[in-house]
Amino acid sequence: MSLLNSIVLPINRFFNQFLNQNLIKICVYVSLVTFLPGLLIGVIIAYFFGPESYNIIDNYISDLGSIRFTPAPLILDTIAMITACFLVPVFFYMTKILMSGTESIILDSNNSLFKRIYYIHLDVIAFFGLLSLLAGAVGLFGVGLFSEDRTTKLGLHFTFSVIVFAGLAIGAFLNGIAILFYLKKTLFPRLLGLYMMVGPFIATILFIFPPITTTRSFLEWMMLFSAFIWLIPIAFLILRSFKSDEINKT
Image 1 (cartoon, rainbow, N blue to C red):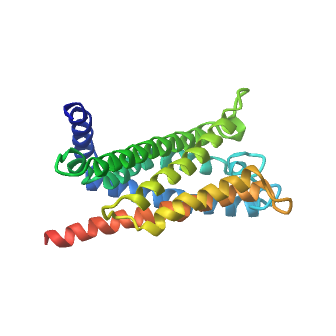
Image 2: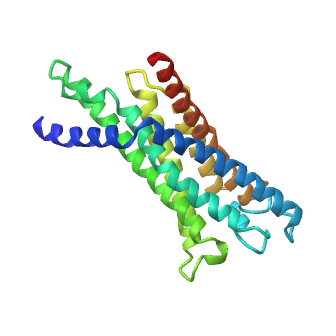
């Protein structure tokens, strides 16, 4: 158990020192204000001023980053890179919330061996969920850095596009398991955890095996929307928890 202590305690100290509420609050606000409005502005500009009247049925998200489809490709590139950077602390904080309280359960010898092992497994799942989400953030940054117009001969834009969607989908699935099956109550509703397991997974499967009547570009947008459906509630739940803390302190 001393080995477990040596692993868990330093990680816990890192989370507590680095992930303070002020930092997370800034990251959440910047992410919300940057990506969604920026994406909407990019779509509007591409639709009205682009050479091919951009639409989500026939055009991929990445087309917003190409001069062939919009006169303002830097909008998508910029918001993707900025959002990716500010999402990283939020993902760490989300994992901190999920794992809060499990350390005392795991290290308490008075608890049953089954209960302790059960929480260890869920913490491991949440940790790998964090790694997947961080990979998704890296992919999002890469999508902006290596746009369709700067993809290079290695096809880096496509590679990072795969990383971002795979990272977010797998991360949602693993964190959804943790939210749904933690015996302790967490900040995030179990129904949200269930959606995280099912929604992005279905959207990804449909993209890989598209129905005949649906374009793959539209299904890519559906994958993005399926991520919004869990990312946005989590962001607001975190902000609401901060407000509750402030009220309790007064």
